[in-house]
Image (cartoon, rainbow, N blue to C red; front, side, top):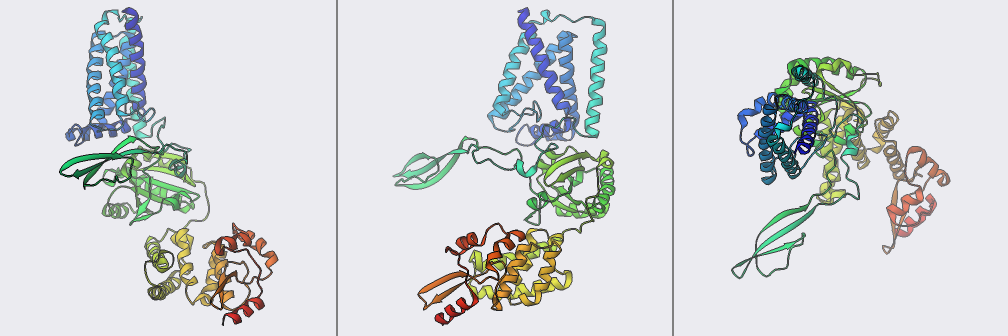
Length: 553
């Protein structure tokens, strides 16, 4: 019994110290977990939610102190009774959570060691057995000498815990075990490997067969049953792979900007999961830092789960010079334990994270000239224009006659944009949307008028040079001249029976692949022709095309 008590004493103390320290490193994260337990549909103790952080700090410090007193053998009766009451309560809690599937991660070891509900319950059962050994064998818990130092060791441990808790709350957790730790590339964290395990489901189909209820189970296919379908229930047999980052998105007005910002060279994210709970002192601190970041050439945006009304009011009240976007609240709480807080990204990789108390420590090396803010209203308008531009082409949702009318309207809109802004390029509306005005002009009869503007946009880095080349080729083809890069094709229907698809004649066809490569084309002209037209490339001359045209006519 003495050996068993000694083993239980060391094991339980070590586990309580480890578990307590992990949670003390991130008491705010533990408080979020307690809020889940206190919430409606779990324990229904909503009145405790405002006190979740206070309870979290008390519990984790008490957990560590019990580990210390157990090792020392200090106040053994108090210690084992406290251990027993705690483990009985948490065993009930983890069983309730597992059985009713209420909270999917107990938070016992924070983010360092996530456990499923049933794993947590199993762990607590083992602990309960060991604590019972200690409870009934407490006479074998002998104190460690010198006994006079015990109360001072406990007091020092308690003081150190309080100081550490205060530090991580005023700054950030010392150890970051979350999916968004420094060095993480967010985009890579969202990807699912090709060989990742797939989720498996069982579908229980319910039918009425001649007045008798019959259930057929399949893996997804609709069963062939002579009867009336009633309902279907889905059961998860095996969970599929879930990437470490699975709930991160940057959105505004129904448009997703995640990829755009994760591809940018230098971005500062201001994380404010709930603006109504953001600290005023923190928002004032953020204001000065973000103004400096913008001046240094950074793209600065705010992420919040609050309403557009709250966003507008906070921006106006604190004179914030950056746009606010919507992101899932849980994701924001996971990214940073500060409201507000700062995250510095470099092409989607987290390179720095700061509590608002440490805002002035943000490393802001000059990265280039200050960049203009994305014009979100114009971007949204152009994105809508692009959908209309493709409606009758790639989408096939309207007739060609309707498409021509839409093209005319789109052209008028884009011309007004040119008058007001010049070409709406990458710095004004973002990289993907920068191609919209080009697409509209490419499908219009205004290429000759706006080709110089398009060329300038390409030269200034506001538009992909490949798109500029495509418009230039189309313009030359319309003039009946040789194109430069081989991007344009045509089909000649000789006698309406022998269609001849071909790449429009190219000036200096021997050097076309060199020109294409220099401009950034990924395919050689031969590969492009094969993919686009399904025929082997042949370098036609203008004279040959003219002769074929005569046969066609």
